[in-house]
Length: 219
Image (cartoon, rainbow, N blue to C red; front, top):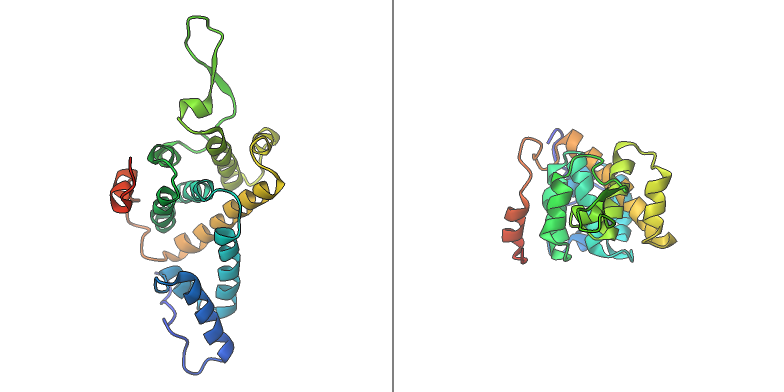
C-alpha cells in the first residue's frame, strides 16, 4: 500500500466520536476483522464513516437481486483492473447464486462487448434471430446490467438504447440502485488501485475456476 494502514483500534488520544466510527465499521464487518480498505479509509474517520453508511445501504437495503449487483461490481473490477475488488466480489457473486458461466463472461468479454443488437442465428427457416445475450449465455437482465455497467464505467455518458434496455427489465427504484452500485464501486476501484490497497496491483485476478473451488459452489 502506498500509505501506511491506520491503527486497527482507535488511538487512545482520539475523541469518542472516532471510537464510535470504528465500532460502526466493526459491526458491519463482524465476524470478520476490519479489512485493508477500512484501515485505509480510517486515516480520515469522517470519510470512513460516510463510506461505511453508503456501502452498507447498497449491500443490505437494496431490492435488486444480490447476484445482479455483484455481477455489476465484478464487471467494474474487470474494467478498472481492480484485483482486490474482483477477488472479493466474484466470490460473493457465486455465493449469491450467479452462475460461474455468467461470471466468466463478465471476466472475459472485451470492453463494450454487450451490444443490444441482434445477430442472425442459423436455422432452416432463416427467420430466427438470436440476441447477443443468448450468444453469451446470459439472462436478459444480466446482459442489460453488463451493457449499462460498461458504458457508465468507460464513457460515463450512457446511450439511450442502453438505458431503455435497462428500463425493460427493472423498475425505477431498481434502476437507481443499479446506477448507484455501479457508480459506488467505480469510486471504490479508484481508491483501491491508485493506493494499491491490499497489495494486489501486481497480482493476477483469481480465475473463476479457482473461485468456484474456494467457495464450494457447483459449476
